[in-house]
Image 1 (cartoon, chains in turn purple, blue):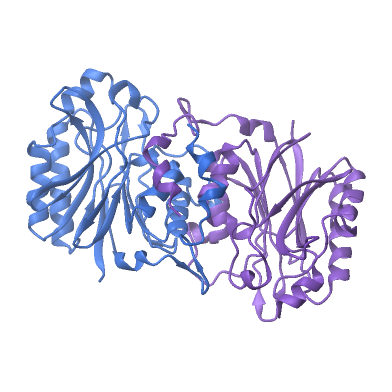
Image 2 (cartoon, helix red, strand yellow):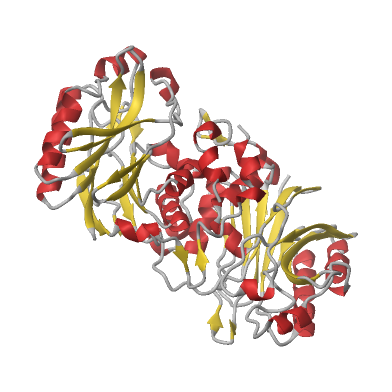
Length: 278
Length: 278
């Protein structure tokens, strides 16, 4: 069964949490109305990214039981859809996390707190203390990670090994200032393609665009099929929703060519110990 | 210190082991004369790839102490060079492996027997039973893997974690019949670029070209820098030697951007268990 996946690339504003909330909600509504059943939003979609202080991040942070995710659930309910998005989370004990939630029409199904913090994020966020989740949904098994997590093949591989058929990746990817990869492709797209191909999973990267306090974001959202081929993206406009159809159940098979299997062929006895090193 | 790396893309013939041996030796000689100090050859360079039978593979297989690798060492000695190449190996107890050797001017320094066998290879080869090696050389720390091993991010990551600054990959990559990756790049180049970028290592893929018994090879050799950018390749001609200069010692640093470190940021507690599953 194919499901329509949407990545809503947006340009949140760090100084305007209320505006950001409305922006994301409107984008979900339009994507669901357009047929999407899995809607992916950028990282920190409610707060923006380039904080001046920990106080500013905390002021924009919201609880998992608050209006933000309830709003996503209301929009999801209009089309029996799922929403995966990144948000600035405040916990009951006052901790601030760079989190992502998977929400359906009834509310929050899974919560993930980013394990690998980028750049100045440790000044505003506590690091996650739980593995990235894989959620069985009516459309297939969905893994959730956030932005810089994509640079840890251990994490993306572990999501696929835990059953993820689609890896969703709310992202705030700064515009790349290093050389492009093969064919002039961005490193973000190279990593998404490699992640998909290696583990025979679909990958939906929802990036943001715009410039905040001197940081320009890449606007590099893309949806990649389980063969590593790009199904949609990057968008031509700064704010644009990408759509693509994927058969997630096909990713349960890890067949590679006629005779091989990407998972059954693994030989962890010969590398697992090295990977345990921290 | 920069070192010049060469990938000698060749077209061995499965029915002509003697010719293949001469071809490789000549290519090493030319590469060393051209300034290369690390010379990489394709997989199974002495035997060709598309065997009709296990007997045919066995007939082409040679011992690690035989004339083939001694010839590589003689060529290496002309320029204080190293050679990494794939060959069809026959052991004293009569086992046939898809192997790679790292050779210097004095002889064999390291031997690797391919861990992940592709397509019909299990009919001709026994699988390796040792981790892929990382060798301290005068030019830097060199990891060795073979072809389909590149599709196991656990293996390539483990080489980098074990200290590899350059991953050499003798390869016989069949021409790709699946969709291209981003920017029209081949999946082989996407995987090489992602491997390099993720672990901040150089990657030298030496592929073969030509067609054997109906199997067309990609001729997709390339040398990728530690930032994931392509330094050389793919070749324009079927048989061509690529050259690129890399500072392998720079790969000891795993810095990513201004504030991050690709290795120190790892959090194996949250994925190592999933990766142990076989």
